[in-house]
Length: 117
Figure 1 (spheres, rainbow, N blue to C red):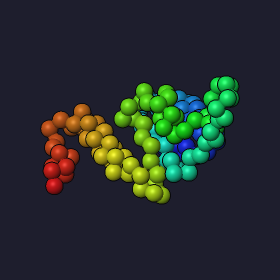
Figure 2: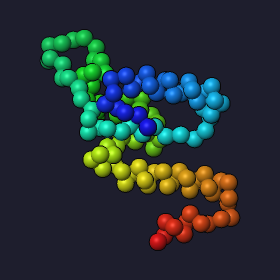
Figure 3: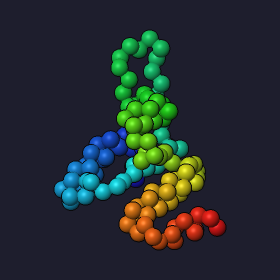
Figure 4: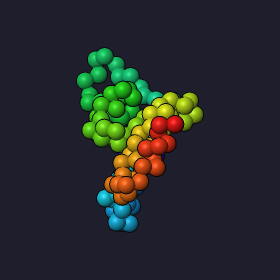
């Protein structure tokens, strides 16, 4: 879970990834959830400003198209406070847990029965 409104969120991701490596857990399935999209802010550059964009002047939509877009379903943008994309988060987590469950217990259809209710 990443606080995308924090100015150093990318550095925080690096610290967590390094910690996971040190714990020998970096190879485990994981998702990156960017929370607080409702609090994300950016500063629009002046039209004549030709300097390269920085993370301070990239819109959330542009940010979602960066390296984060390559993560596919393993990367979601939510707002817990405003309940934005919470259903997508729930559905994605359920799908991923079900996939892991089926791999480990191929003859147990417990999770399939829940989804049909």
